[in-house]
Image (cartoon, rainbow over all chains, first blue to last red; front, side, top):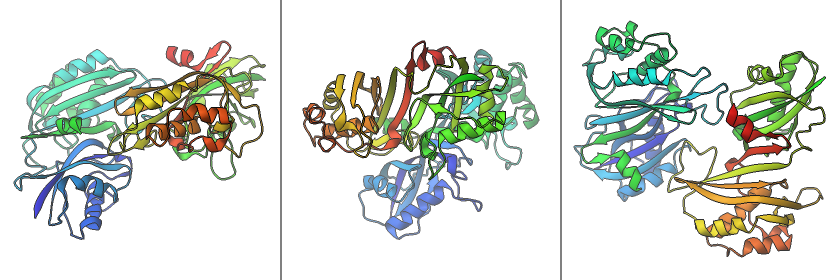
Length: 256
Length: 256
């Protein structure tokens, strides 16, 4: 048996999310089915983490074990022949059997895109949240900077989610403008369930003037979900990068 | 009765094209239905020209006549409430009753996008043609420049299309690179049916080394459809701009 790690991109529009679910088809289920067709083995694919229904990925990482004798770098093209066009394996290689897509991850980066303008753009509608009233960019930027550092993010997790350690270290949290697309980029050592979407929802309420900038800090300190804003819609969110010791998706894809 | 002109953007993926067809729903049909719901009048919408099934538009122009008393600039937002999210009216204004979206047009610009790389990008898959083997950019650029000027484009029209004057004046014909997206932009005083897609198909054959650069000139001179290349797929093509005396979609949208 060898362990193979892969980088996967997907348009989440038509999926119930990463994880196998009873109520619809998931990205993980497609990958497992593709491997089953390819290898005749029943293979379990482990991802770096779940993404919610409708969330996209430019660089999700997963691993699986197989006894099939095929050059490790050929799995990408071979799997793509068994996958729908909105899921693509961008890279495959053999890795240390001790590598685990979820437990070995050191950092992740997400991007949340909003499109500002009177009318929603038809070409970015599936990948960005349309705002017909322009929010205050500087206020959102100030709120974003309050997130940087090591904090207890208990106020920024889905209230249904299980008990767990809610402290996370955030090293990047900033908005950039690209024409009428405004992108929030956030990098950290991990994210709670719905954390990025609640951070964005809170910043959008700050940007629209419903709340003062200081509410971000206040919500963090409260550790109370009710003090943070609404959960922003899934379709603006995209997993951009996962970093492991010696394996950084951004570095790997830039040389491909 | 007043004449209103509108700028429309659409993602052509789910449509049979601009024009009302028996075999599926068209963009024109959606606009007419939206106006019917809005005004209770039976309104005919005239576009600057047809786009084929699967072709997109960032700035299609159309006009219609209505007796409804509504501020002309409000039609855009009002129509959007009756349209699916993949069709958006970006602008509306009253115009001279002598204005005709098709017959008054002086220039059009189209863009054809190809995505170069081992794997198709999931996010641009609906809006670009994926090429897993990188073509020769310089050869395609040379072929593109042969198109500039006034030529008889008889070799570059769908062989089924009706008899007509096949001379067109092309003022821009060039490829640009934007990362792994290569975009062919072409501007002219008009285009024959399938002309841009056949130009692109011919250039892709030149770029892949199947034909010499000189074949572009040769095909033009032959006036024979068989001397040109295959028709490139529809989904890479997008209508970018229509220009009329005193009304340029690019200028209007840039100040919106």
